[in-house]
Image 1 (tube, rainbow, N blue to C red):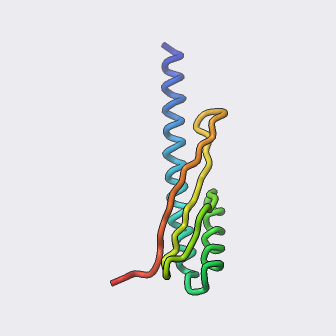
Image 2: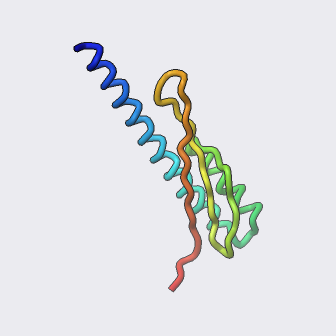
Image 3: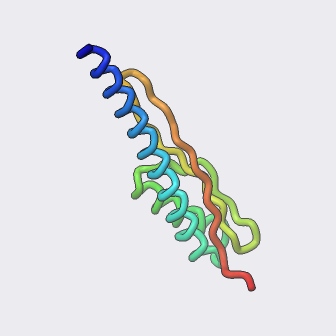
Length: 101
């Protein structure tokens, strides 16, 4: 009975870690896209450099960034270990740009 409780607890913790990694990836992508959009008028290189800085500060790794007009599209990965010896990656993409009427 004790072993069953430990297994359920372990798998519950693994699910919680995966959910937290998804949230971290979404936050890093959102903030990176906003930072890039603030620099969109300065060009692709400047916007993506600004996005990459914010993504890295939020424990993510930027795997994609490009301008689509004045919109910035950022893709972020966050690596996590739900169980010992098992590493996974959570991915999220976000877009930010000027308000359109």
